[in-house]
Image 1: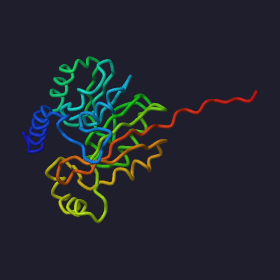
Image 2 (image 1 turned 180 degrees about the vertical axis):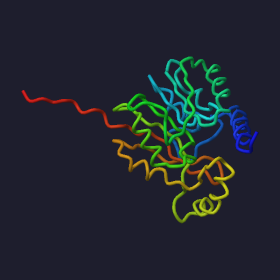
Image 3 (image 1 turned 90 degrees about the vertical axis):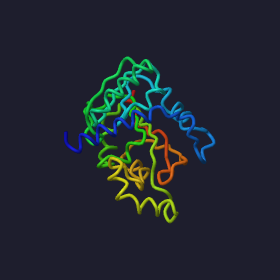
Image 4 (image 1 turned 120 degrees about the vertical axis):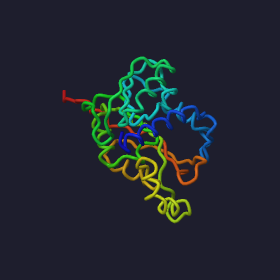
Length: 228
């Protein structure tokens, strides 16, 4: 067993343990609409229908918030996460699930084949953010949505941002390529999706406190308007 395999096993085990944490106990700062991370997830994920693809679902911390009648696909690069995902899906009565091994930069899904794509604390760790967002755009059906909750870089010239910039080289090596200072919102606005709606808030976590969350929609097909 090589070092990479050991790291993946340990990371999966740690994520599995983290599932026991109560998201409703994690309070949001500067977000009057939703008092806790659990309520925010419920608002964003609870009404999704039809085919939903989640990128990097980890050990399944978000599975509790989906409707149990959706067709859920999880694209998770770490195969040691899969048993935890299956356990969580069974616990929350999600019967129509499919696990695929892959990355955000090369999603193993056909063009325009899913209604919603979900990402929670994943875009911080992808190798190529722009390509990942282009892949999301590719697999979404016209009119489909990308739903996200991500930690991001703090405002420029603040102490938070200075600390993020300073620790990022070490942080990403310790935490599976997680970047503390990504300006994710700027890339979201460049990929050509029709509507970008998000809001900012903070979580009570040092260094990765600044967050954005919201919904991005893919442009629907234009109606074929023929002259009389």
